[in-house]
Image (tube, rainbow, N blue to C red; front, side, top):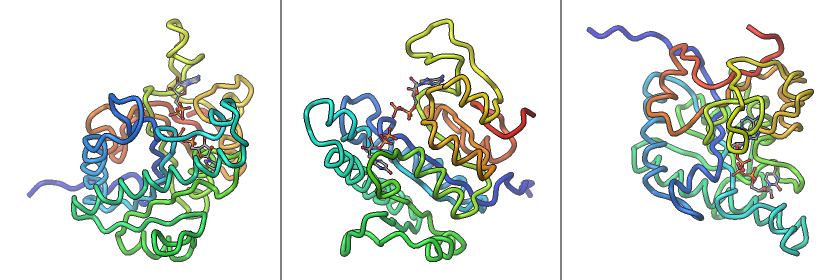
Length: 244
Ligand SMILES: Nc1ncnc2c1ncn2[C@@H]1O[C@H](COP(=O)(O)OP(=O)(O)O)[C@@H](O)[C@H]1O
Ligand SMILES: O=c1ccn([C@@H]2O[C@H](COP(=O)(O)OP(=O)(O)O)[C@@H](O)[C@H]2O)c(=O)[nH]1
């Protein structure tokens, strides 16, 4: 009989950037990316990991970009948050097609479309094996879904917040702009703040630091990476209170 190691984490909060859902497109959602993510999430669920998801909205709308184009910032942020709900509905569809029971909760009440966010129901659903998608960010303008991921991760007592993105970790500078940037394997919250490393917004880092929530930034385009992380893999960059 095959040997089954118990996973490193019992409960995770996985943050998927909206942009990652575009795949090779310039806007919108690539169903192939959703199906691939559903497959990877299914592998984790199969080994008993409880999964909370926060999905960004940058593939559709970002408040800051809309306000730079002349729209009111708060209206733009509301559009950004609604975009995360659209992404969550698309992700739920992919997860349910892959036979995973899924709950979508929204920080903004949206009766008849998705459930309103409720921490206790979310924890019950996670314990019952549902994948829970937390949508509409924090429900407040001027925040990001990275902050929402740290907030929900802390609220549901996740063991780690995993930020799945399009770079393979945190670098000394933005690797898309600086070809000489070097990757860190491990960093402290304080180093990220002092060096102003832009991979996650500083509000999110402060929240994680204040509640000692480990963060890992990794490349979601690497096949099998999520399952590897569950069995002690060290892909990407770990951000913690003290360097390991
Ligand atoms: N020091 C850094 N290390 C790694 N990535 C960085 C850094 N500074 C900025 N970035 C950028 O952060 C992006 C990842 O963050 P993400 O939230 O997924 O995307 P976005 O900010 O476009 O929504 C990468 O595309 C990368 O270009
Ligand atoms: O708590 C939140 C989370 C998100 N947003 C808005 O929703 C957009 C999409 O989220 P984000 O940029 O974090 O998505 P990602 O970069 O992960 O795709 C943001 O630009 C904001 O305009 C917000 O106002 N409050």
